[in-house]
Image (tube, rainbow, N blue to C red; front, side, top):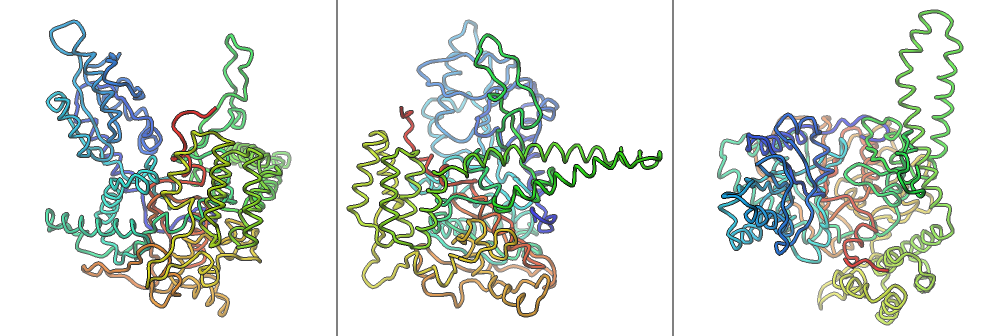
Length: 637
């Protein structure tokens, strides 16, 4: 469990090895020297499995980022090798670029083209891409491979497909390619660890994903009838829980208040890395060359936020930000005292012992320096009047407090020209939680946004309406019932007025009083409330996790919450094991997960002796990154 203790759930290292082996196999398919042209969105995931030295060992001479180029503007590739490998997601824009390169190649002087072309689609080729190549008569000129880069291991308990624009493509455009890729990645896990004994979850697309997963299992079994893992239930993973992002939009639209979540909200975390000022890590910026405006503050460095390599980050990443400063102060005092120990070293043995600790002290000191700078940067945001005002409106909306006043406050923010994504997050949150948001208010709000921020945002407003994020609450068909957010408040205890941010006992600490709806659903499935009750009654230090109950005997409001509710068991041979063995429950989010939700699931892992929660997702998201997928492509002045 990243946070307070080492992860003792299922070992995810084999997934990294599988990805590395698949990449090397792709490179070795072209035995000669080669030049890689890489889709920029793959830079982060590739960096998590292989370094530049390993690429050199497998014949990579040069690497370039792919840039979108229309076929009507042929452009020569200035590559030192004959072999070109295009490593890209299956998107037509990259095939346009390849076609532009090929045309320039054939137009160059000489009897034959200068390069041999290979495409490695990540993770798999798609039919639209194949149709494009056929239409352009390119199939005979290009060698095609699949590079099944599936889950990136962001930490020992977090896996991500790192899909780009997954929310827009899946929920707005209706492109279900990502569901197929998710099913493939989950099948890889079943081939590695054994079948998930039980599959359950909520959400229409979550249900569709599980249907695909079951179908792929049948197809794999038909082609590999002797595959042992596909005939045996996993001894380590006791269940797969799949949640559709649209089942809980309140959580990503709210501001995360854990340390890692707030870093993502403010600085942005990409593929486990964050861009920070070079001075924060003790680096110096390059000297100014010809421009007086060049400064050290302009230099950026990518820093890996990895709890395995940075014990200090592991200790504070899931803490509510309100207590992080005090914890850093405590660490600083301890490091200072450790350094002072060198004055007490009087014998050779004592000096040698201090020197032996010096390397660790210097690493801790560097980590403390980095996180102190990050905290100071976050404080510049969290201490502002605007941040507190936005947070106040959010918390009032979630608590159902005086909706009309909150709507008036959102309108006021529009006229103050607060950044548009912040305003839209609040408006979408009001629609997600409020049963009394009227169409008249929405029309007035949309008109105000267009007037104050520009007509460029009109398509975005229409898309938010299409996604039912900025629309009046849907009405249930005759004879059916649809639960409202307020209906879930009491049975799921979504609001906690007595939250303890310093020593949390409940997951509501990650939003300082709001318990993520998605994680409450996981608690409901896993009978977590009963675990906490038993802990209080028997005062056990770490109670044993009960067997997963699924959706049996849950409150009707949960069943009637929008989205399919499903629960079924996979039939296979039972693997031997005992109830005392540590089991891992895999929680998969279709459409993205927030760092706050991960922190909440980690707290649940710490509260049970023998159940851990492994998070898997299509991507990491926050409210801004979700809405950013819908922002106008044309820069807004």
